[in-house]
Image (tube, rainbow, N blue to C red):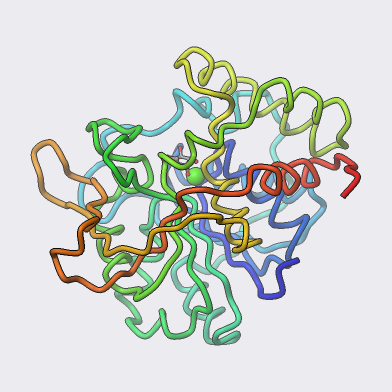
Length: 313
Ligand code: BDR
Ligand code: CA
């Protein structure tokens, strides 16, 4: 379905896992670069390696930054993802080792080796990419497409401060650097995520009909599914899976708004907010194609197939 190569920057994470399963089911994945975010770097790296073992993929895993650029994060996301980021499901650690090269350096090298061929999909805090941009500001010219899961475009966030989303709020400076450096990117925000929660009953059917990937995802998502129900959310929030669907199938977006988006890095109440120039009065160039509506059916088909569920289409 997707003919360019994917490079995934991630902090696995339950919804990261689903996104990475989707990527391996539907495209060729060049590498995973890993950051701290949902939980600490050692654990997100372990989780990425475990996932490669479950998939049976030899995709290299490059560990990157273990903290935001400037300030300590206010919180991780273990309340949703579990203390180990994979739902505290007592997994046996993977045998495979991560690569020795730093994630940001791997990004620079891989985009030099494959200029204009890589779709970069960022589904964690943007620290690794910001560091890569500081080392080489020409990086955006070698990236065919950038898809970011992040932000809350009308201020309905999910992090410590009201208008802030986790990936941006965890490292606002990194996000500001990335949003300024790329002239054009796809943005899949938290608010879109809440409109496309995956129904728990449907998930249950997939767990029964799918293969080992479904069993694995059932185990690691149990904690997050409970947490979503306790919070009164509509279905499982699968932010990174939605972003991956947009990366794999751009046509899945049925309504988009292309706007100038910046990141607030100060702001007593708004640090980490994604500020969208909805009126165009600010005059900044439109850098973000914000996914407002997607084809739910196509999204669900991509997810189900990644869990090994046979469908008619
Ligand atoms: C984002 O935050 C993380 O907890 C998820 O993995 C996702 O990338 C959603 O706000
Ligand atoms: Ca994530």
